Amino acid sequence: TPEMQAVQSKMAPVLSRHRSKCYNIPGLFEKIEEMHDVKEEKLKSGEWDAEQARLAERVYVGFVRMGAKLDEESKKEYADIQAELATLQTNFMQNVLKDEETWEMVITKEDMEGCPPDLISSARQAAIDRNHDGPTDHVITLGRSLIEPFLTYSSRRDLRKKAFDAFSSRGELSEERDNLSIATKILRLRKRQANLMDKETFAEYQTEDTMAQTPENVMKLLTDVWARAKDAADGEREMMEAFLTEKGETLEGGIQPWDWRYYAEQVRQANYNFDESELKPYLSLNAVTNAVFDVSNKLYGLKYVKREDVEA
Image (cartoon, rainbow, N blue to C red; front, side, top):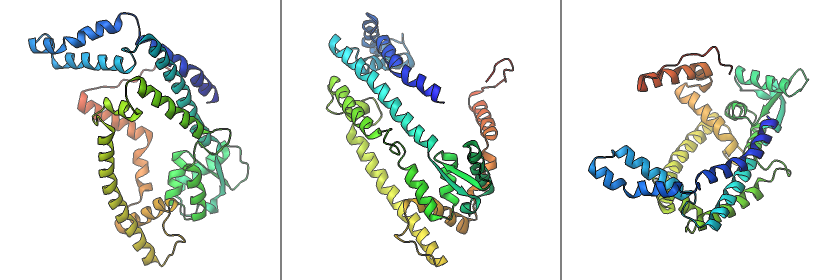
């Protein structure tokens, strides 16, 4: 709600500064550093097990990455950067959400040719919720529960394009919500954040504490995945083009991003007799919740008891 978003915007920098102060309590890091320095000795002697040594390592690294080893002036700057980033990232996210909430495409039931009944019903309810009084009004919003199935099932290419263009432009649909300038500020602050940690780029700082270790390793993985993913996508495109040829259809400009979900679904139904909409009833909230409860019980022995005295 707008009220909750206002609270989030107000509290984001406050909570960030509180977190920074927690990492800079006088004398605390010195104690943590002492434990970190003796972890190998305690591990070898058997006084600590591997989990305790790992905990000492992770806590130490967490404090260092929050600026515990910086001088006082740099600590203050680092905390200022963290607080400003918290504000900017919150604003960025809320701009995207605002576009999702406000954008709508008002259509009629006839415009929803090819869409399953549950999607048509949801679009009609969205129109009512947004105070569209026309008896045939239906609304497609940028919420995933509406936009994705519409792109998958709607046979109206012009409407798919309109919906896709809006979905791929979230965060820049209004001049009042300028995410480009916010992103620029975030990148500059991250660069300074990395420099304070003796890193040339934020990518170096961010990957240092991950399995990848370096930006080069990340790019190597992404390049490898990209090549394989592109081969798979090219194969899927060929299947869709063959389907169009068989149906005698021609698309101006060929298959475009707003066509992909629709024709991929058409190919699935034609080649495998599989309709995703038929799977949906099995993935209701209650069904998925019960499945999560069941799996966690089998894996971890967890049991769930409903609390009648707690208001959700």
